[in-house]
Image (cartoon, rainbow, N blue to C red; front, side):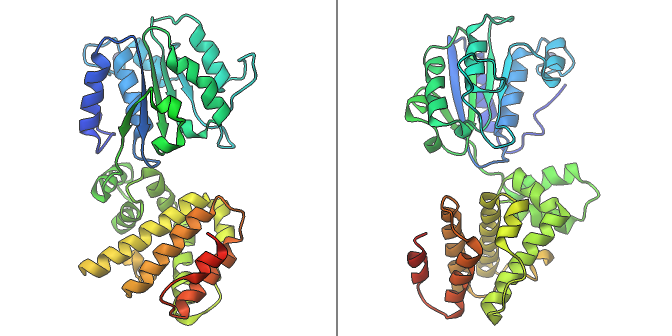
Length: 336
Ligand SMILES: [Zn+2]
């Protein structure tokens, strides 16, 4: 029997959702929100597989429906997710463009084989406003027995008209211990101190933990943090470039990872807890400086929507720290 052992940390939500899906209902739309890599889609797929399973202990993974689902050929499961450009397109009016919103709408207008459709839209916040508006009618008047599960970063990224018709389930980040146990399962022979570093700096997201387990990316992030420390204490010029690094790691992911790293730095400094050895070269032992760095990273995160030179912004902001300014007026000057 397949268990939900891979979905760590969401037991109460899963139990609640299992009960909810058992109830006979005309149709339903669920909105799973939370940071990337915490199991929103995994939970949705588990629940759907459990619903369609024909075995006595669902999901059995061996019945015809479970096998079809695993091979992505179950006829009444429709899956939308962002394309290589990170978008879910609205598609043309014919509804022929596979993976688009209008393609989904067309498919849902056809009769299902089993009597009920299951739809998973991953990262629904990557659908444009026009696309979300096109989807609205389907969510307002779905066919009998249709279950639609949307995942998104937060409810705010979904149109009010859609979210008011969906039941929102918030997913919390996983704990460092939970991430560590998943990583240990996946990589039993990996150096435990690196798994621990990845668990801590992941901020509760498996997606971030995986970035940190990539040796090349790990080195680049670690070098950038060492550079930042050297810039603060010696006013040296950085060898690493934030812009270069952004080619390997999405800018939003990079700033989130840096925020996680400095938050951990702050926590260990305050609690005087032992430091993971991979933080040795990054560690900053002044509370005020870490707080300023966190402010800088948050400003850089906001700046991702603006087209500014992040390396210059970072240098300017760190120069402010070096000057031991008590506030950061340059943030206001940069208007970020
Ligand atoms: Zn089954």
